[in-house]
Length: 261
Image (tube, rainbow, N blue to C red; front, side, top):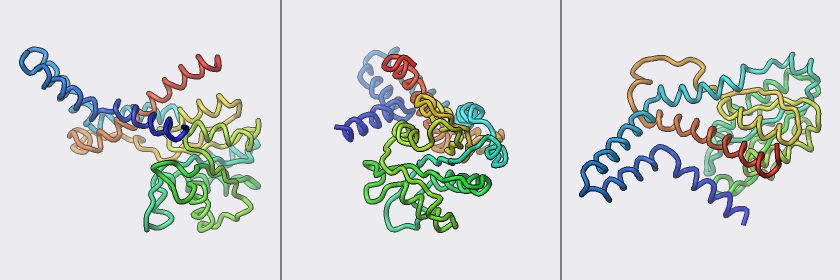
């Protein structure tokens, strides 16, 4: 049942992204093709929506808003001063197949490298790695285990690693990491665009995350041919930002209705 609900949520979100919306509008235009005004309006709306969401500048500006909320890179010295004992790395991308241990991690490896940097700068700290065996993503090994394998290759001793290898979602990660870190402040490492939602989820668990963003995508936005011509990259970035904002809206509603928070 959990797996069914997990997949169902993913499908529902996918249908809210730009390309499916454009296709639905185009199909609606076909239904009304005998009535010129509604058909024309639907076609115009679908093309306009596709054009706007496909501009890289659109996606970059939307992502920049999320990254501004995430804050700057974390300073290991400042984390030490605050008594941080755990550096928590949230897993993201994962790819299976006959590829190297680094290649299989996608953006997760960027988060991991930032986590290792902070761990090295905070004496005596532990590196907490998250991610279970997720349906449709990682079915042969937990992502936390894959992250741990790469960490060992980069010289992190096994005794410095703590694995949370049962989560499927960021919400799961927050719930399962909370008992590990307790009430003390800890560094939370994830992609900058993913940080606002992650902070929401961890704070809902009553813990004290200190944002340590990585994997910035919109630190500097330039107006040139690469940002002003509609392309697939623009759609991807718009989709990333849309997913985060929709998820944050849903979380705010969910926790207010269900838990009164």
